[in-house]
Length: 129
Image 1 (cartoon, rainbow, N blue to C red):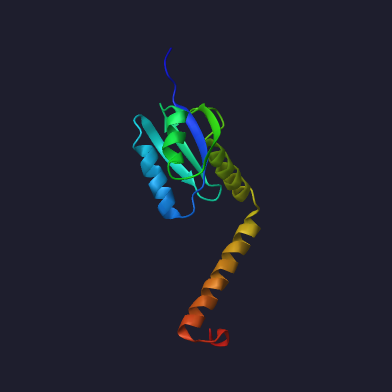
Image 2: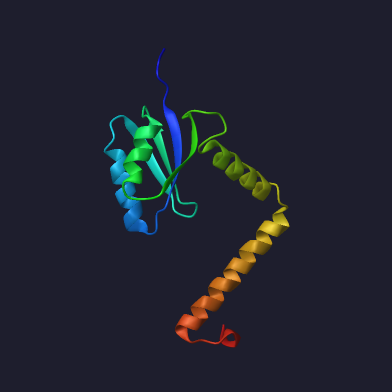
């Protein structure tokens, strides 16, 4: 049986960026780790590779409170950047499907904002422009 790459998500009690760097270095020192990413808002660390989840948790528990959240395959469908790409495509299609008058209106507003910001920089009033 061939070993598959695993996605291991661990909630770690990280307080600052220094802790994040230290945790990422600790996990990177484990053999066969392909990638490590950290989400400071949710305090989660995602490890991808041919790694035993127990080893990752033991390594992190030396310094922080650690809780194992998810163990799964690294290439599960719907994971990663595909959802972000779909969202970007949808937004782009919405922008392209707007009427030309709305696009022109937005350009006019941007030009007016630029004109106002330039006048503030040069101390000119809008009446003299």
